[in-house]
Picture: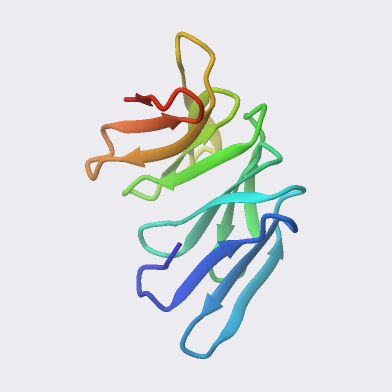
Length: 149
């Protein structure tokens, strides 16, 4: 993921579960943090660039301060690997999609899971998209190649 100004690139190590932020102009790491006990699958910057959200194979969603590099909240609601994470445009919530068959929305003001979406039949989610108005969330499945809105 790229921050708002385009100066920093956030990426994760699948094997180490680490979060890295790279400043491409100076070719240096701005941040290296151990994040997940297993691989890190998805990363997104907040709209204002002040926070980073990560989703990992350990089933956790973590939100990081983009300046200090510290994780300030970890959500453990998923029962399987988190494959996709996205900030809403407001920056006050994140949405995650997991192999456990759920799409969850987390409130970053009250630090809680405020919405859980599941399908009528068991499925595994791999991707996530949110429209610009934050009204429509779409999640794509792994095996059946379906999109749920």
